Image (cartoon, rainbow, N blue to C red; front, top):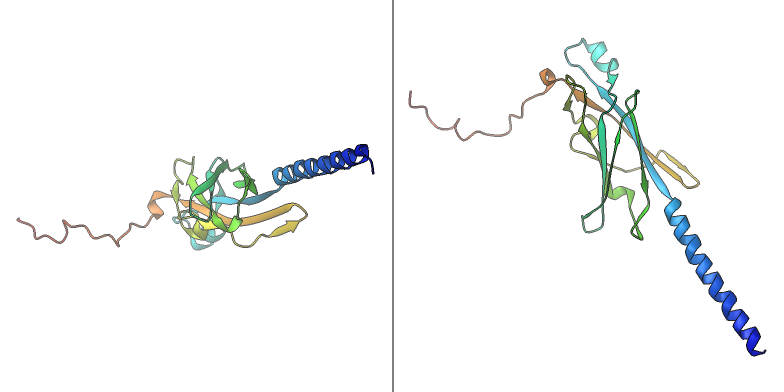
Amino acid sequence: MGRTSILLIIAAASFLVIFNGVADALKEDSQVFQVCGKVLCQDCTEGWNEWVTGAKPIKGSKVSITCLDDRSRVVHYASDLTDDGGEFEVSVKKYTNGKELKPQNCFLRLVSSPDPVCNIATDFAGGKTGVKLHHPVVVYRDIVKYVLGPFYYSTPMCDEPDTSIVDSNDSKESNY
């Protein structure tokens, strides 16, 4: 083999290594997982049937997804607003700064409701405290989709006060 053949082989091998690296980078950028669900208003002042089946979608409600790394540091945050049907869909890239996000280290929660009456976040389905992603509903080619909820807001009249907190003033005797 001559010097020219060896240089051609080295050039071809270098080209393949570079092309493979570019292809991997494009593959990483194109892979996403999706998180979707619905946000509804549930009014406790209605009768039982209306309360259970009559929840109404909230347009413009904000949900957020937060992903942590293995050391519990926030590595990704995104939010979305619900559409007319109260539905949201957040797409999250599987790779951020060259590191893979693990969906099981992500959680979604309710952030805000634009409804002036129905704006108290409830913990039905974990919306108030946040719900972790566990099992995808759709896994097809490059698509992984998690469907959560539905999540609910309620009216202030339906909000139950937290009675687990003891007020230090309640334990003192009054001077009256």
